[in-house]
Length: 340
Image 1 (spheres, one colour):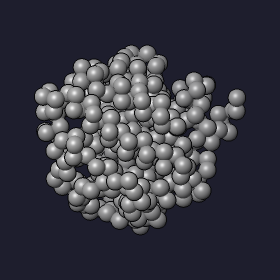
Image 2 (cartoon, rainbow, N blue to C red):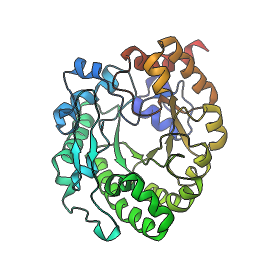
Image 3 (cartoon, rainbow, N blue to C red):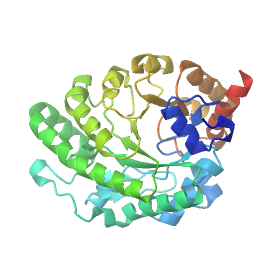
């Protein structure tokens, strides 16, 4: 095995996935790490950075150049697939993420996935940006991002209407998420073809919106299928309290699970039992947004000592999070091995 001091960041992440010994943990965020300050530093701003490949490239490379992370993830928003398939979108501004406006469909029979959605300009921006990142940073892990069919169902049908269907018509829900998984698979493969090394599948089946039994019945089959069909290691991201479904998640075959601070790090490790690699879970709304770098460092050290495999923010970071706190995640992670 290569000495980990000479490992590239991508090598480091791959070694962790393969259970090889490394001298430090990897550090990155498989969802958005961007902030307004980074937009100013890189002279690339929302909303253009959501759908312009060059601006997306400039802003996303701050993950490595400014924050010192081991990976770059350029898909900042949560609306690309929905927009490319007909949803109306408010693209927001430098201090506001894009939002989907309204619902598109009422039932399964209404679903019409655009055959050419990969040609949509916002989709092309992601694919072109990934190609540019791979060319510029061959030794840094480039992470693509897609949304799973549970989340896409919220986008197209509305959260409330879709969740009602899970109770009143579970067979239709199964049909819906299977059909929408076509979008997830196609966009994921296009990003892999463009050079993505890993794929984040964000699927917001949090405890507040999806019971553990619903995860078991609806999503173990779908996430297992995605794990087999997507030809790159998958990072499953689910927001919120997920302790009651980590055991189920570990049955799906995903390579990594990115989780929030609502699950205490040690409890996540205990529930996971080494069946998948864990990423996270540095707190966003309190620690990263309002506390000091010393507080961030303490939380990083706790995550490492608890057995978390890759350290990073728990979710998309607040757009006003202090830069020094985000940088401290990388500094503390890299310092840990030399201090202890």
